[in-house]
View 1 (cartoon, helix red, strand yellow):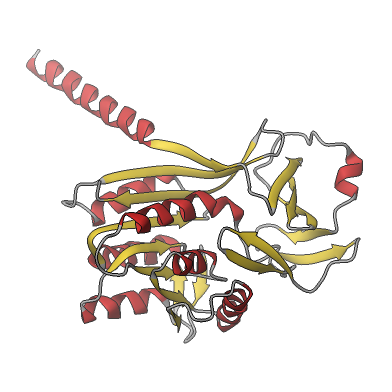
View 2 (view 1 turned 90 degrees about the horizontal axis):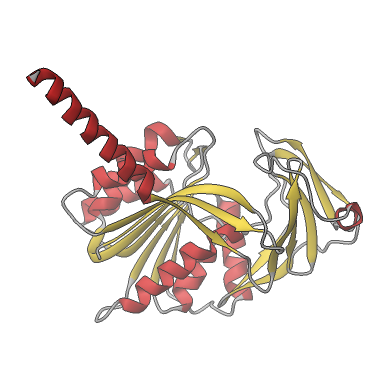
Length: 314
């Protein structure tokens, strides 16, 4: 009887923990902004407007049927086709598209391009994270806030933070991506902003910053599933992320905040939530974990894009 009672208590405890896990996972979405809209989605595709350019791209999670008339899809300037697993392929240009064109994102101007990996240098679903970061920076009093942006790509978060008055360290392993980010910096009128551009492996850089005793008030981590550093360093999300996150935890200044975004197939928001809770254990504060999504312009459906965890001290 005592053993049965204990088993029931253990089961109840596990059930309560599972319910807590489910309750803490949430959906954060954006309806777009003036220069971006998700026009329609379905049949494994999404129709989007970036500034004045409309593109038709693969979206395997759009399992439903498109709602917009077929003629609207035919009016896209460019259509991407290729191997979705590797994200490699090519664009078919159906209407004139400039080599690059401006897309306004808050205080930043991003120069979008039709890249060979189906991206255009901007991830609009990140807008809620950028707004959350700016709110954290606005709360900072005293010293100038310091932001560390790891896997920073073309620098939307970097430029928004710099425009808000932060000192930003932008780290990316791609020379091409940093050059693109600097073009965005010039287009945004932020050439005098205090941005430190680091062509480096994110994990190695973070480890060195720990040894130097550096700290930051906001840390952004947006890793790929797989990648290579400038010296051939191999990045594998599931083996490389835990030690990097431990270093990021050591780099957080008092009162700092952290955002982890993961674009990973066959992964769970709960897994990344629990990793962040482990590396930040003992710090208290609040966590938010779940999925990012973009809602269609009609407001009826939302396309999931990535997983995230955010932490702040209160």
